Image (cartoon, rainbow, N blue to C red; front, side, top):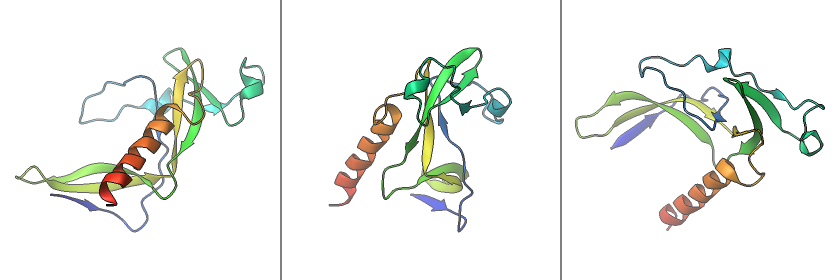
Length: 134
């Protein structure tokens, strides 16, 4: 069995879904913030006319475009971290933060509105509700 412990109000976190993986030792954290600096899309960008709410960034020289994807209505996103492990494979998870949406990024273009990672999350929540609400 897994138990989740949480402070009364988990601290808000900013979550990004990047089209890449970042390798670092499990015992440390990658200093992504030192290199990944999202900003509003500038008027000089080729996609600016369709840019409502879009952001741009670069990571290792690659251009990225991002869009905010809210979590589905009636849900909240949590960032969980291990607290203790049990002998039976269960354990306790600690809530490290919460979020109401995340930034989905694509190479050179933003993921489609209502598609990509946001749509996958919506479908997953719909499926989970269908399984557990009955």
